[in-house]
Image 1 (cartoon, helix red, strand yellow):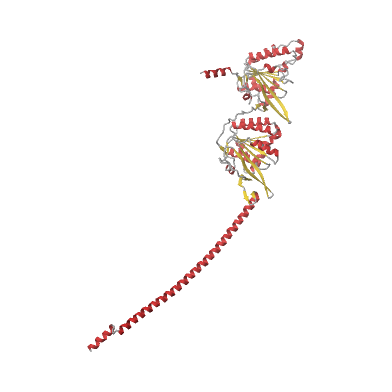
Image 2 (spheres, rainbow, N blue to C red; image 1 turned 135 degrees about the vertical axis):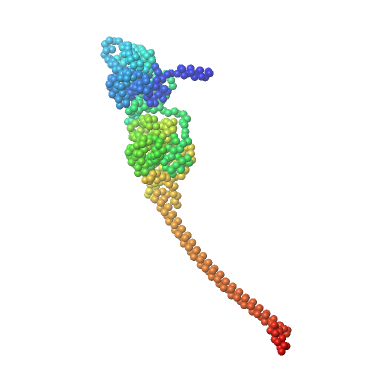
Length: 583
């Protein structure tokens, strides 16, 4: 119970905030500007103070149903309406609907000098009427220097300034007061920054001939806030502020895999693709096919009906679409179906921070599943390596938070600077593919290998990377007697070995036939010897039989002779004797 009561007391005592509706600013201020209190927006000329405060009024009326009053001391209502029409803000319509009220107050320095007095009572009456007429919750005074332009007495200035701020607090409105930046202070008077509850400093810098706008919350009474400098972009949709993402490494991860679009490359990864929400770097020298690999990855995602965003810093979308047709990819079809969107710009168009803001905004608007930046090394032309790395850290951090898979391409050369560039960028990503030139026999071919792939096993082999009219493929590198062979050298060695294999097979076949002939001759000789043996055996058997017959005849003859000598006669003799006796 004590913990719950303490929490309720804490929440009750927290400072209430009014959301601005300006993209990114509410994240930095953790909810918006202090509700019912004045906020000072200061900065030099051209940094966007008027646009910032006017968007605060318009967003409040359109998105939060909070009417607002805009008091201008410089520009008239018609001028303001014309200036912001290109941003899609229709001030005339909002005034007719009594959602906002714009009033121009002209302060003449000569009038103050003539009377010798200075009193804001007239402003309070006019401002109070404007607030009550539409039930305003938001108020802007632009710019306060014009209000005190003719006043040199610091005591009166301080007193009137406090009266103005107290008047706004009593009316219960969330107010923005804009002020020009002074030489040694945030404002020319140097007093507003101390009276205001919240102070936001806008800055417009030119570095290396490239302009960058930045925002910093100088102070915020009663609230924690971001203290860094944040770049902001002014485009056709208003102001977009890019907050530096969280430094805590607690981003969600996915176990889902995405195909690279190259089956042979997927086969080199143990899980068959990249992790969803991971970051991939493809580096190589000019002409090695980095953009083709990125386009193949995009093409594969679009076939799966996933949204893809292609940031091109080197080629126009028409060039990329035309070039990819030559390798069997029709990116125009994905563009027509709404799965693919290009965002092409030269790196020198903005500073690094502006590019990051533009990328953030495009991603939030299109909500892609896959993003490609081609090539990131071109960004070095508008910043040094540490600045590019800082930008990419924030970009990767944001993409991981959104579970968006990103592929970077990076140009490398055989120089120390570019090797350092590769190393500096590669440490940020989850997977790194490197394409190297392999020069043999006067030919330049490509070899690819996976430098790293966090969270999965991967092949450590160098594969020959080929680009054909049917797409991309990886071929096993051929090891010849003199080392790795690619291209025509590989084909020649394979032909040579195939010829040798054919000759070897032919020689073996010829020897087999010769052996078969010898076998047949040997078998014929064996058959002849068998016949000869059978003939000789038959002759021998004949002699044995004749000898046996002779032996039998001789024995019979010898027996007969023995019988004759012993007086024995045969049956015929006995017959003859009987016949003689009868006679």
